[in-house]
Length: 205
Image (tube, rainbow, N blue to C red; front, side, top):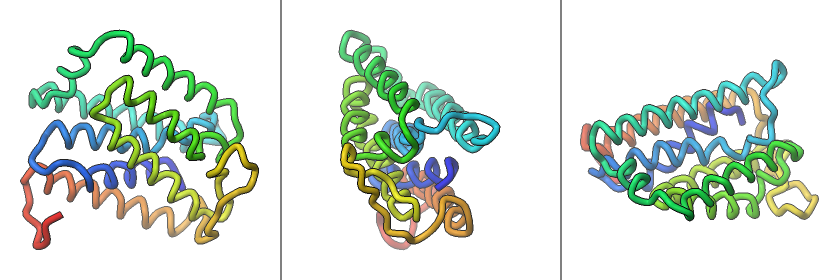
């Protein structure tokens, strides 16, 4: 699937498990879910041939900036957590995350970073850097793997095994991608509004 789809579905998936009425939980879900939803595609080098990869990274940077500003403005606690936990574990987590991203950028697409091994490694790095993001990052990352398993090209989910795992249901581009992107975006907006108590759906989530 394309970057915007992964970001939207990742954020929506994370918001689905966020704590109702908690601004901190919503901020963490949006930030962690969108980052987890796209980070597996760090194995795509942004270029003229891959404008979607660059667009996805710019969107995540924008989402992160808005989320952290919202956290600071609402005094939700995520920024306070980061400041209070400055130290070796946080630094180690950031370095590990950067190292994994660097390694991923030098691997074949849909291989290492699209595996359960990589997901575990990235989650460990996020736990060290900012533990409150972990559950939402993990859900976002899992959503990426699920969407790409549906792709006809498949992914090396069980890396280092070379076998591709694919359900063969759709292609990365096309009607399915567009439908998932709009559905993910709409779900993210509605879930965010519900979690913040701005709307009350007929059925509790």
